Length: 331
Image 1 (cartoon, rainbow, N blue to C red):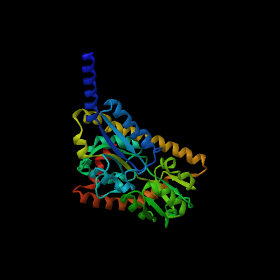
Image 2 (cartoon, helix red, strand yellow; image 1 turned 120 degrees about the horizontal axis):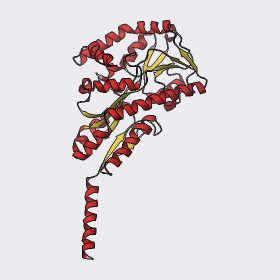
Image 3 (cartoon, helix red, strand yellow; image 1 turned 90 degrees about the vertical axis):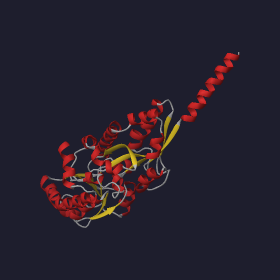
């Protein structure tokens, strides 16, 4: 009996020690729990890390701004430790991510999977953007298409005077060159902006149809427009990362990085395909720019892109065109 009691005490002590060494990380994002990035990236990551570490490291996902509203504050939440991990869009804080936002040039990448693979082949070129946080994942969505509320866009002239939602400074310069009026808005606000007429059109990728129900507020969608894609990251508070045990850190490293990023890119591609199908089912007019019409868009944006790249490159001591050429050559 005494041996049994001693064994029970030892087992209890081991359980207490395991519980004491267990770590829970808070992951913040601003979309609904039904968003593809929650369902196919963040929630699976939480399940896998718990299984891989037998509960020694867990991740609790806080969706829909539960740790603070506003997608523009995600980087700050990670840096200050409000969240241990944050889902962050570099284009929402371009002053901090001056290298990453240069990747938003239209035509640089064709699809999220090839874009994400190329970015990870050259991920060291972006190191300066992530000096204050640990980068866990970096991926892209599909190139943007143009959703319009009332005006069908079949030519460059059709954009003239339209208020167009844009995601980043590069796209703002481009929309101005096309004759439109750029309006900066986070993706979470595009439905209301379209439905109330705050904007006439939205530049965003096709996955937004399912995420934000844009088939309900857009009458026309123009594809083959030279649109940029957006970039997405999972970033981690540096102190929280350093405090992990060697075993916990190894498990997290094993489940993040390039592999998690490629999973996210594949999920975005699938969501984009579903978005196009939803537009067809909703009888939204799908317009494909003819080659000559597309060429006019490309020609109009050439000068502002060059100027933007020059300014952004100089801000971080880079030749912007040479920086992009590294990614273009590998893509």
